[in-house]
Each structure stands twice: as structure tokens, then as C-alpha cells.
Length: 151
Image (cartoon, rainbow, N blue to C red; front, side, top):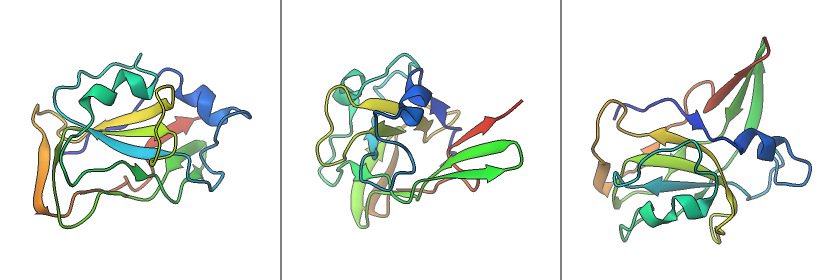
């Protein structure tokens, strides 16, 4: 699969840095990975889970998962938003087009839980990627999902 670059959503940075919201590196189970099918039309102005939930994967082996081992990684003037891989299991049969990170608990996502970023799992294509009774795992990029640079 040709993994696209993570795309940050409009309100994401404010929520990540907010003192009132769950923070990326606080160590609690408050960020989730979800999968969306290829019927979803990406939009940076989709800010809440309710904006995308109609296109969430409906496959029987699929369930939202916690976004684990989150950290900010500093490298020179660059700061990376990093986490563990998005591993949806093995063996599973799942078809999906987009990975999304949501600021919310994977066991109980709420309508107004905030979208942080999305990743196109078929960059340059238009199809779902799938597993059939095998692993469905999206490996986190080496330097993290998102890069912030201090100019």
C-alpha cells in the first residue's frame, strides 16, 4: 500500500495544545484510530467525529483502536507527532481507504470528539486497501505522523 502523508485538520492543533483537552503525550487512552471507507470525501473542515462517522468501516472484524505510545519527538527545529503503529489485528478481514486519528476514547467515541489527522491508505489511487484473514496494520512513519517546524 502507498501510504499518503498525514493531513492535519483545521482545529486539531488548538485541541492538541489545549490545557482543557486531552493532550497528545499525557499517557492516557484518549486518542483513537478509526478507518473510513472510500465513500468518504476528505475535507480539512471536518472537525468532529460526527462529520465522518457515516463512512466508518463496517466490516465485522473492524473496531476503533487506541492510539498508543504517543510522543512529541524533537529533532533540530522540527517537532514530530509520533505514536505506535495502528494495528487492527490478525487475522482480520477489513477494507478501508483512510486512517483517522480522533481525540477521544476508542471504546466510546462521541459526536464532538475532534479529528486530529487523516492518512490516505491508497495515495494516488481511489480504492480501499484490504486484508483477508490476515494483518491490517498501518506502520507509523519513521519520524512520526505530522511534522511541525519552527521557522
